[in-house]
Image (tube, helix red, strand yellow):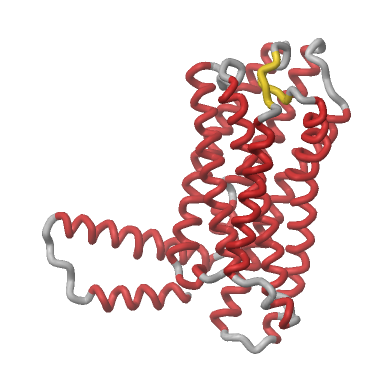
Length: 333
């Protein structure tokens, strides 16, 4: 019975992971295109954080997809055979997870500051400061994860695992439940709720209509992103805390197999955080749908057509400058 459960667990992990990775890479790539190609988003701090988050998600999903390909080919992730791969697999994955969660928190916090009705608080954050904070946090998490590599080793009875007892306790009681669990969830949720309260007062401020519309759109997108983050990450975080305090030995194969299946289900739910943001934005925001259509059709597709025409030595139309001017105007809407 336990062997059948292990087989179901492996197949579920492989198929669900491959689907999430494939759809997530496409969605995050479109996010990066939209937030970098449209002028209203280029100087927006929340859009900058969302761009960094999307890039981190792409790298994490590409790395995860590599793991699933290895498992599908060799029936193993090869971490129990190569020490370097054992150290790098968990280090690289944890780095991207921490960067993504930090960017979500920064997005929610910046949205709170940018929508605050107090002038001093509203202009406390700048795009330059956002870039500096993103750089600092990325360096901190890379350093944190590099230090972790010194404590991973191939243990005969456990495979690739943390071999240092002190760092094992640190990872068990702080890294997993706090850094990648409760701390980002609480910070993102509180800041998002405060920002939602602030945005209701935007209509009272004397600001341009286009700016007000952009603020409302960004705030709604950030709120939905944080809400999905909390709903998807909280169950896995609670399960990890429960599993740490109620461990199951391998000597009980049936219960251990059931625990592994439950863990994989919660982990796949949590991994949706890395690939679902684009689809949430598309569903919730009609303005974002128009922006995506504009970027994909009138920017990327037209550039591709012009490139093909240039390669075929065809003369570009004379009204291309007028078309480009009209395209820039459409970005505002």
